[in-house]
Length: 160
Image 1: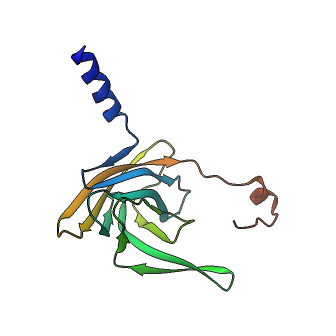
Image 2: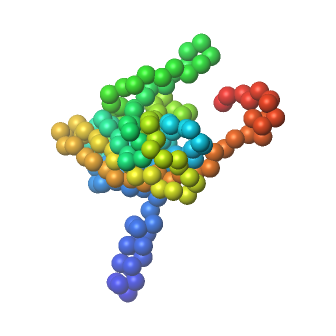
């Protein structure tokens, strides 16, 4: 019976949809597929510090020359962006990153096209408030672009 219980627990851990350490968890990591000539892509993910508050200070990936943390805000009907050095993370509260949130993680200088189904390796570095530096390895799934049929017909598409 114990063997069956352990097998179920190990299988559950292996199939989990998150990556992380005891201190930091990454969930729902994905990027959109790219088209010919595209050199940037936004990384979508949820990041949680579980044991102490902290700051996301770096994100790297071997498929990009660099990755920037950017703050986004509306201004005059447009979205403005500015590179920031880090982002504060509250203990126990997931921070969502992506195009539709206050902060975005942008991969710049893509070294190869990203195709649906690929896994993009990510390395996140978080400085915890207790002074510990945590490095988390994660994989971001490449997902299909979600374009509206209106793009193809030349109709104006409203932003959400």
